[in-house]
Length: 396
Image (cartoon, rainbow, N blue to C red; front, side):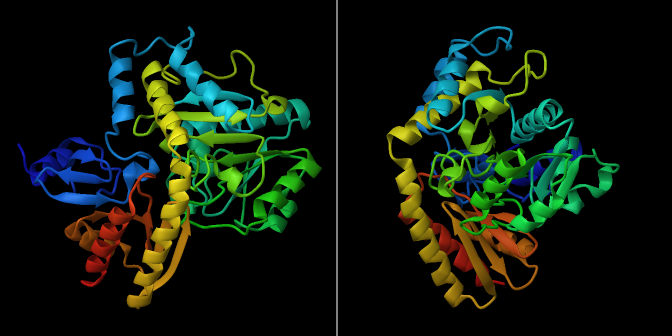
């Protein structure tokens, strides 16, 4: 069995039909390129949904995985392990945070932050338990994080939802103010909404939210599952907006391709005590060794400055494309997280033609596609990918 169509038939027979896949069976990757089971090459502008921050099979990450796999894989958190503690130290020393807990995904990281906020409210806010989140947000697929997510189409099939979440418009400080009550324990926001369509807030939005949380004595949680680990051009998205959260969540790019999640907090609000939280696989030696190696490489090789340079280059190329394609209505970009919005709901057609042209995109909205390439992508690779996108758009 070698053809893509054969593997797709296997998926149709055996796999739960919960994911809307594109008809591409990827079998190999290197840097910003992947190849399918039929030998076709693609420029990868998806990077595992903003996960493969150093591209596919980066030698530094690969070496760390191989060495750790031959040394120690799993012990549980009943014992101390060195890779976990190396990564913990690196994240804390390079952020405004004081404590970290590792899980296996972004949803798990957000679940941990939600538990922390509820425990904090019980201890310091007279039992407050509500968390204010934004419409068009995305915080995960578990029952708690679906309830936190401000998108009804993710929630409708799973009602009644877990109570305790209040949704307001994104980029609307007054909405947060009006929603705050004596039941409010925290505000939970993405610095930039990724899955919601790459929605970029006003420059002072998070500063004003931070001031309000301070005035009210409630926690500010920033969901940096997508924006963290260099995606916006700083190690953490909060650094782009001049604020410090009380709690931050990470996943996706933290593992450089390996599953990992984390929630971090300031000392004053780490309300969880022994027995309150745990994970069998969270912070396992393999995942943390990969995350440590990738993050160390990112910091030591000035990848963050490169992201800023490539943001300018990609922005220029996409806006030039917009000037030539009449049905592109908007370009939104922050770091190497971008959206191309159309004047009608054609993202499905765009994805199909882009696959044919050899560039992988994400259909983030019915009328928009998302671009989130490896952070070490080159200008020449951006040019090639955007050229292929233009070829695709020319067939619509």
